[in-house]
Image (cartoon, rainbow, N blue to C red; front, side, top):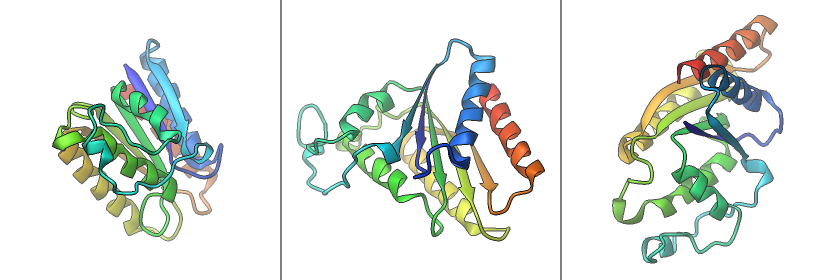
Length: 184
């Protein structure tokens, strides 16, 4: 099983990434043969899509923008599980993750979803603000629709309120993330 975790938080080693790390530990605990990798988007140079549609016109279906996203395409294609992790900013994914998702369009030539079909998707969200909070529901709906269109399977989503969390709540969230990894 090949697992690619895509960290959309601008904060290295922050709560969002810690939840992903626990998920990965859970995967390894159950599937010690798993091939696990992680992309920290903030550390990459990824330009926004310029809507030129060249990726839809060329034989190799690749984006013409020469940046770090070019290396990410093969990682996406070769993964069985995609873990998307993002803080929720203004009721949506982070700007970093939005850039990444938009550039995944280059893998969808002529509406052919074969680069995505059958992949499992895990969504991890962190957010602040009062509970209940509509941000996680909005982001989850975006991923539900995206997965349905691309014929991927949204296995589970985990939303964690990190605004002044009690120590017990954060420990529980980390344990939940670990258990999700074991169940994949």
